[in-house]
Image (cartoon, rainbow, N blue to C red; front, side, top):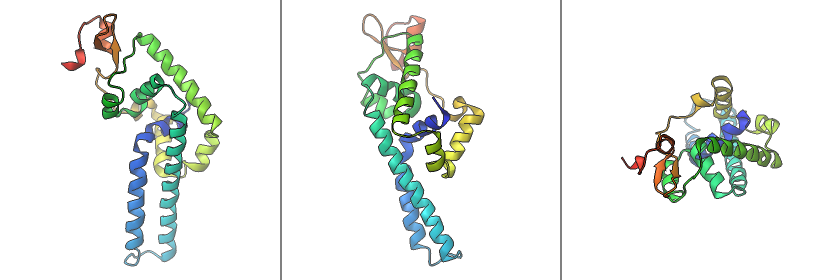
Length: 191
């Protein structure tokens, strides 16, 4: 998966909040513009920059929602676990979802998901040229892309607890992914 695609995936859970926050910034700046020391022209330019970022985030969220609509429940779970890390979603939407395969198979399925997402991004015209034209002018997206390219994905993401990925053993008991690898029985995440 390309770096710009990872940036969009990592940003996805925050897009709605960013859009709302930018809308509040636009309203506040417009209301307070008569008190500012900047010229009317620079104030309007700044408002247009904010509006552009808001529109980009709204269209990106809509495009990603369409792409995610083409994924299976297992692929959505893998996507949620690796990129979004919304614990409440994992605990509510995927509370009954279990993966019953080895760590090696998990990484193979993640690789297969990356290939499928890459194809879906390209089908929608979301290639690197589109990203540079549309989202790279927004400072936070450009900084995120630079961070992924320079420091790698591991430095970009937060650390997670070891008991988040749930698997089922042969007796269909819930185990954490790592306790299943170690051969432990019972629900290690419940401790």
